[in-house]
Amino acid sequence: MGQTTADLRSLVHTGPPHEPLATARKTTRAVVLRHAMPDGAWHHDLLLERLPSSAQAANDPDDRRLIAFRVTPPPHDPATALAGATRLADHRALYLDHEGPLTRSRGHVRRLATGSITALLESTDDLSASITFPAARVSLTASRTDDDRWRLELMWAPRP
Image 1 (spheres, one colour):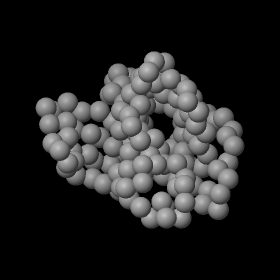
Image 2: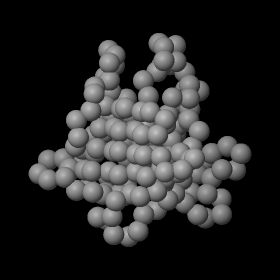
Image 3: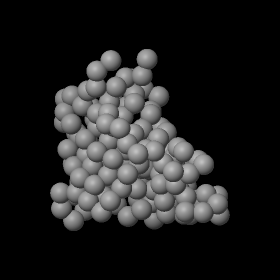
Image 4: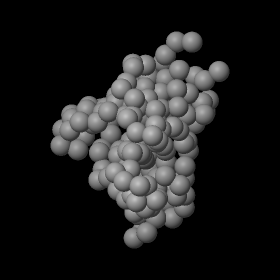
């Protein structure tokens, strides 16, 4: 089973080793949301959960522990690597489960995929994660290209 470069749509329709997370709770979640804006435009939001900083934070839906990227729809070629994203401010944990309208007229979100993160390494300019979605195992690498612009690459292997 070879690895293929894919876009976020591939996770819905159908790597390199990383250092494991070092806590009793070894996995966190990743979600892909389709964010429809009030003007009709849309994009994907990719949210990656960090481990909570404390037991109290683990139960706080307002804890800002989600790494967030706005990903513009890629070209229609499903084999094209996901090339561009905007890093957003960290999001609250409640967005792991939220679907529906957003406050302050920011549109509407629909969850497309939920996965488990088994490894997440983050620095100021780079990020890597190993994620298991229902349709695929994904190795994500992200590199900062400008202030808030990032290049994302997804290598995926379909799950049996």
